[in-house]
Length: 308
Image 1 (cartoon, one colour):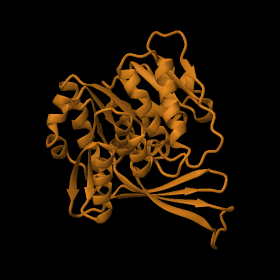
Image 2: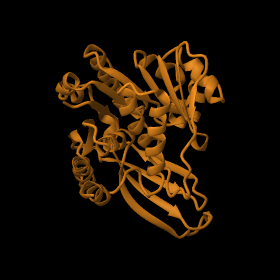
Image 3: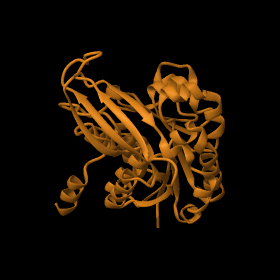
Image 4: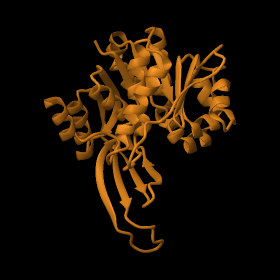
């Protein structure tokens, strides 16, 4: 039985890691690599890598990139339910990493922005088989996929699935507005956001204060706060549970670390483990993700892990 159904975005990430400070208007040497990406697809891939039965519902182009992303998901062991879009390309994200490790992303959602309620209906069997839905916030942020995302939440509620949501990214979330997001995701049991997204949703810049505000909308809230670690808070609890981040000798690329955290946290949380244990599991997977380029391990690394 498929345990976790993930609905959201599938991307191709082109990662450019600058060797020196950016030379505006000129050339800067960089290592440029291409990887599978997309927040929703990343979560599903990490879940499968952790041995969780995971399905992913999304949309891709009919291009070579889309075919490669589809095959990658299957390589991780994900039950990939991708609708092929004949008009739009597979989504693309350019990830620019400075010589200091700061990250900026330029995103073109492509086919992701055309996810339809009918695409969700084609996968209705998953909502009867699965026990949990995780919805990527990008599906709500992109206006073209919003109806599909809302339909997916409705279908999960009717199927009595537990539901978790993330908020995508702080800048587009701010442009869209906090109130619509909070309204659309009512009924979700768990919200997972980073500190900047929590501030956008609440106006509070301290994670513990933001978490307490957010529990007016969600029974449980998790906030990722980078090197400061993570916290969990639930209704009627006196104080949040906090767990420090795992120490890392060298951060290679933070792309997808939040997605890896979600994939590490969810299984323990779904199994009813104590919040501190679930947070630690998420932190561990996030630390692993930050020690290589790209949002997921390459498939050769996965193959070696399986053999060993």
